[in-house]
Image (cartoon, rainbow, N blue to C red; front, side, top):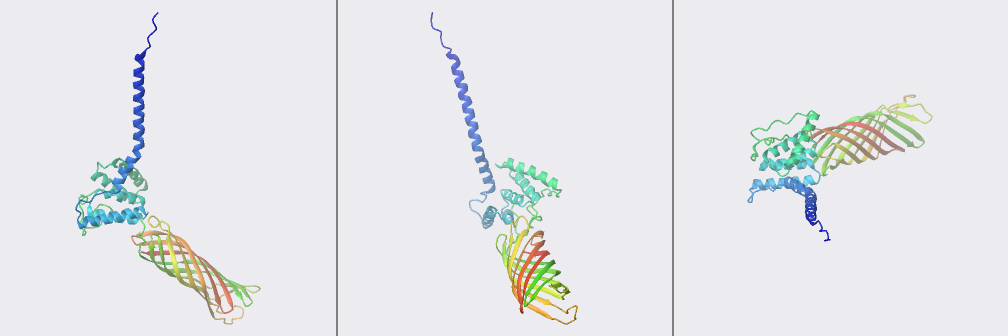
Length: 365
């Protein structure tokens, strides 16, 4: 009886099918692995456009310089500066690739309407951009946020938004992008601040057999000026005061009495640090000062005998923190909480002064 023949006709299709499945799976795996790199390359191309001609004019070179400054500012987290550089570069060159950079920085600054406008203009002028789908998704998200916030939608593009490079004499809004009204002041170069408020102060007096306290409420204020040395950090100086009218003096074993005034004035160097200067107005300040305390004792209530005025000097420390809201591009108003400490000597008496105050402030940059 002949040996049965093996059914080899079914092995070949099975092998071919297995090979096809392996090839498909491998291709898909490679494709997915390469996808992030491709998207990153697209985003990098969009964020860093090589838009200048082979023989750039002075205008193009200036636009390139502004773009590079904007790129450096963006990488350093100085988004407000980056927004301005990209915006000015776009005004000079009219290159639509820069609209992506403007949209990115506006988005970082929380300027949703401006970011939405820039991204829409980018898609209109570069509909076939490599990252068009990514930007379109961002537009949809921003539209929802702008609608939810109740913000006024950006006006439609007008005839001036042709993409041609605007001349230097044209207005700053010719590119269809409004200035960052909702942003923070630039906080660059010099700044000046004035503040006025109310506070409570306590003065412990000792020496020459005296053990008393002087306390009361009164006016607090400051005038300060500084220079920005790096983003968010200003160094300068200021005059600070805590003045009390009719404070109460309490001596051990004696009845309380009212004095005419107890005024502490300080002057010295200070530092002011904004934690996120591009996006919000939270800041902290500190100063080391020369302190001058002037106490007018008036007359003792029980005997009506005059006491006169005493003046003492010493050292002080001022520390505080607050928040500012932008009013204009270089103006901000805010609120500041402040603590004052001072050690002062007058005649044979030593004063340990403490005050806590709340001030309203106005700052110009």
